[in-house]
Image 1 (cartoon, one colour):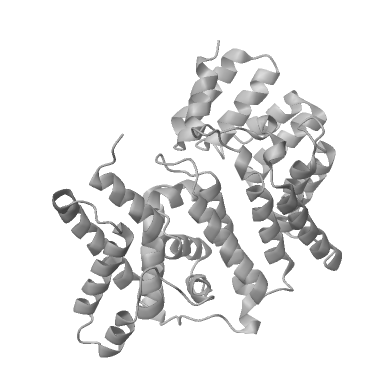
Image 2: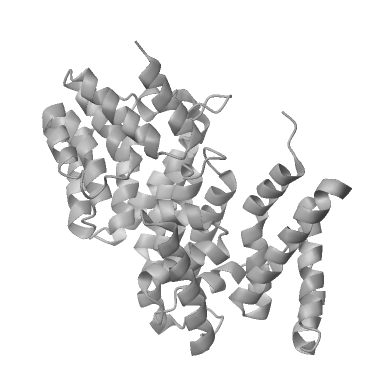
Amino acid sequence: MTSTPADELARVVRDHAGRLAASLVSLLGDFSAAEDLVQDAVETALRRWPEEGVPDRPDGWLFTVARRRGLDLLRRQQNYRSKLAELQWPVQPAPDDRLRLVFTCCHPALAREAQIALTLRVVCGLTTAQLAAAFLVPETTVAQRVTRAKRKIAQAGIPYRLPRDDELPERLGEVLTVIYLLFNEGYLSSTRDRPHSRDLVDDAEWLTALLAGLLPAEPEVTGLLALIRLHRSRAAARFTPDGQLILLPDQDRSTWDHAAIAAATGLLTRTARRHRSPGPYQLQAAIAACHCEAASWAETDWHQILVLYDLLLRLQPSAVTRLHRAVAVRYVEGAEAALAEVDALRNELGSYPLLHATRAELLRATGDHARAREADQRALELTNNPAQAELLHQRLVRP
């Protein structure tokens, strides 16, 4: 099927708007002005591309229009004008340019939810809908958080810089949360137009590696880097050539990147030896390592995974963590016990498609196929991911 100018514009905005806005913010120090410039360029493209055709370099075209608008807008501010004139596309940011922006967005003057929403919106280019799916809240709530955060930064005069050494500990947790959510969105998208985004995953790994270089003694940074790399090591087995999702039990483990797995587990092990009390990211990485090192699904060390989830719950007692733990409970204590754990979460995670998909699997394991179909149907109604939706559809049409 031939894509329309609107389709192409949507793709370019999705892939580049975040970076474009980040480059403008880094120079202007004004989130709203940068987003306005990008939005203005998109609106211009909507008018002109259907008549003039899609340009050969649509991302560069958007950048040129945004830059030109910025020069017009800032004509009276000569210092900004000289900076804008120096911009080139593709953007070649300084190594820590986006990282400075992340730390600015995660300033302690902002509420935690606002820090995360603003960073993902401005730095990483996630849409309001993607943020709403990540936080499990309405889109209006996310939009309000972003607006309030930008206003707070402007009113408080929060500087665009990396924090001092004594400020880093209180800022690091929010930054890691942002990168983790960014990775999750890239690993399995919450939008209808694509099942996953390699660009977002690349960004998450790049930011984490940059942080690890900046803070080599922080074990949770290393833990998050190991977690991302362990998940990435299975990328070749996660989808069929035509985009169908392949769940972990059915993946061809010979296609996993075993050299990357060895490197990531080595990184995790060296960090664990230096720090006896692992944090949430190290524990999640350890769980991922258990899966990556198992020769087959049947040989997975579920007892070890359950122990790791119990430790994780003490540090991070969230409903989503309890849901993932329930999968381990199934293979240690049985499907009935796991189903009881999942049913206890139905009020908290009623709009979360993975809860219903997991529940369907457990109901099938107990022989209750009618209720399993109802749960799969509910998961299908709630998911936006096209590959996940197709997988659930195939389950429902199966005799």
